[in-house]
Amino acid sequence: MIRLKDPTFTEIQSRWFSPLQMLELDACTRCQECVAACPVVRAGFPDGAMERIAGWGGTGVHATGLIARLLGKPASGPDLTAVFDSLLRCTTCGKCSVVCESGISTTELWESMRGAGRELGFRNAAVEKTIDAIAQQKNPYSAVPETRATWIPENVPIASSAPVGFFAGCTVAFRQPELGRAALRILARSNTRFCMLGNESCCGSFLFRTGSWREYSATILSMIQDFEERGVKTVLFPCAGCLKTATIDWPRVYGRPLPFRTMPFSVFLRDLIREKKIRFGTPVPRRVAYHDPCHGGRHLVHPLGKDWVFEAPRDVLSAIPGVELVEFPDNRESGICCGAGGGVKIGVPDLASIIAHEKIESVHQMKADILASTCPFCRRNLGEAGVTAGSNVEVLDVIELVDRMME
Ligand code: SF4
Ligand code: SF4
Image 1 (cartoon, rainbow, N blue to C red):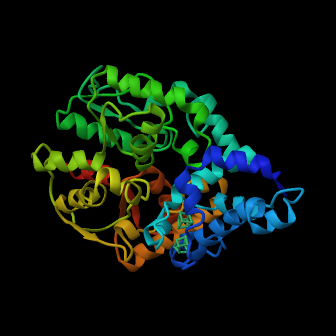
Image 2 (cartoon, rainbow, N blue to C red; image 1 turned 180 degrees about the vertical axis):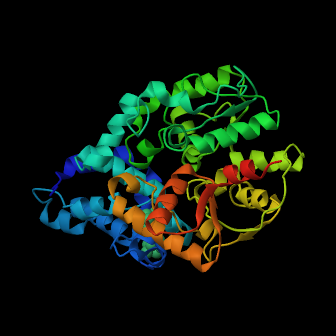
Image 3 (cartoon, rainbow, N blue to C red; image 1 turned 180 degrees about the horizontal axis):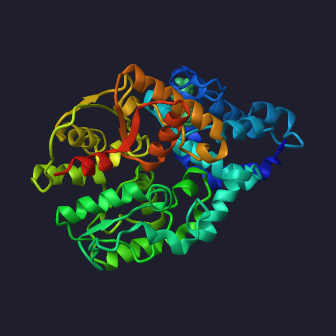
């Protein structure tokens, strides 16, 4: 059990929370909309945003509120164990922020709480192991860094500098090389001149989501500088987690707008199709359900726009001859997460599995043959759930489907 000394707690709060976030902690009307929307609550855990905010907000009252002023501060601070336990189970999907009637930016709040929590000593062993792996091996899988580029085929022409950059990400490099190879094949066959970083490292997503990114700033800065020196104007991301991190979190580290724009790979694919640089072969009838990855969808509506994050992957799927696109009942801004994000796959794997199995069951009800997404991390969690459920549904990335159906 963690019991906090109030002065320390106040200092740490001001270090991790913005003035707006301090107001947001007081803004909850207890309408419970977030509780009804939360996939973790639906999976049977008592972890809605409302209770978490109430739990944390109560600590401020405890230290500085009327009772504290009348009776004096207590000798020790509040017990935040329940709040930190619930944070560990949050996928940071952001569905609560969409329904929140007070407009609270919940996911940013959770990341700040997690950062404060780590500083206060609340640490989960599995999460800490991953944080250490990223610091030392520059990837969350504890893989040997020198093997990062072994997935790249030798016959793909990669320029040393080009206006288009490609950032593969750790999950592609170490867990889903076939997805990366499909992306490179499409770039090569469409005669796209592109370059990659000489020394790609983890984008830092896990560190930002768990409030542990500050020591990693130098690595991020060196990757931004490397892209800039290669003349890159647009960086393509096949991974939703990397895309969000580069779009939203890298500028926080860089201190100003990035010297390039960040683009979902599906947007580039749509451009290639519209320019007729991609041609498809014989139609194969398929019902395809599209899963919106939270970090590449809901989280990026404001910086990148709905057309890029929601419509581009759907337009690509619809352009494939024979594909019938079908939608989950909850889609786009309201989509339900795959269960793996926010460190949950590593910290609470059983929960990630429960949520993913629910999604696979939805796909069965939609009578789809293929579950497609634009995030290798979603693909991995949903694919594993499909296997354990004995499902016939094929879990693929939009990139792989395009690669497979090209002439
Ligand atoms: S971010 Fe998602 S998992 Fe976390 S509290 Fe909100 S709705 Fe629940
Ligand atoms: S939706 Fe927003 S205002 Fe309503 S209970 Fe949840 S956090 Fe509070």
